[in-house]
Image 1 (spheres, one colour):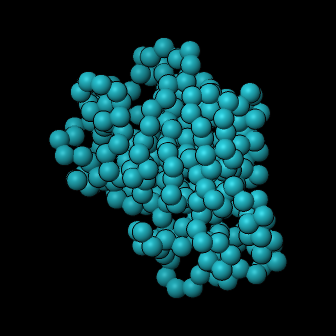
Image 2: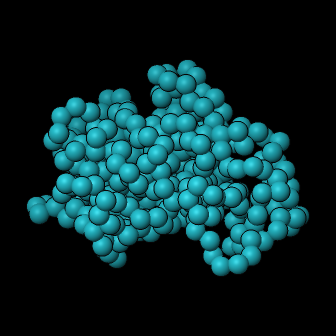
Amino acid sequence: MKLLRVGTPGQERPALLDADGALRDLTGLVADIDGTLLADAEALGRIRAAADVGALPVLDGAAPRIGPPLARIGKIVCIGLNYHDHARETGAEPPAEPVIFFKTPDTVVGPDDTVLIPRGSVKTDWEVELAVVVGRTARYLESAEAGLAHVAGYAVAHDVSEREFQIERGGTWDKGKNCETFNPLGPWLVTADEVPDPQALSLRLWVNGELKQDGTTAEQIFPVGEVVRYVSQFMTLYPGDVINTGTPAGVAMGRPEPKPYLRAGDVVELEVTGLGRQRQVLARA
């Protein structure tokens, strides 16, 4: 299933994108798309059954704003330097263990919402990523297979980053990762049954129509199941938590000087196979 949330910010309602591309209203079945729903197999089954028999009403009217596909995110765990090609372009050694940092849930916006360049920023960068949404509580998982079994679904994430804040201003990466609007998510949460192999997905990103990133999750140093297993050794993952699994080569930081960092007015578009497409216009904060 392709689950999404539509409406003005803070007023989104749950919906489903059917096989014909029509938006179907889920408000009669569920309150929202969040961790509570993802952990409830019976509720998800009712949505599937209603969709299969055409019982879900069509959302009428003009095309609504698409918001983040997940409400009440508990935490966003991010994996750094998780693609062989990205490590090569930045001159970094592939890590022996996954690099973990965090984004706060309030960085999340809709897939087509405006992204704000922070005040004082000169190195705002793009990163297309596969986001993993947790569907079952995960503690001390013993295998990558168990990790995959705890995934509810997948989405497109844009891990927008400010490289000067991240690398040159001391401390951890968090200052360059948690500026407002720095995690567009969606358009859909695609349930795991529609993604049989998360290591066979293409990721692409364009800036002002020019292709910048063209990668594949086959290049991941630590595949999805292993990432979930590994993270569960250090923290408990709950339904509705999100893991951003890293970006392939092609970011501005990896380009020759002068590096083409983002500026107000730039248009960024990105997609992941089967998970939909995002489009953001950059503006000054």
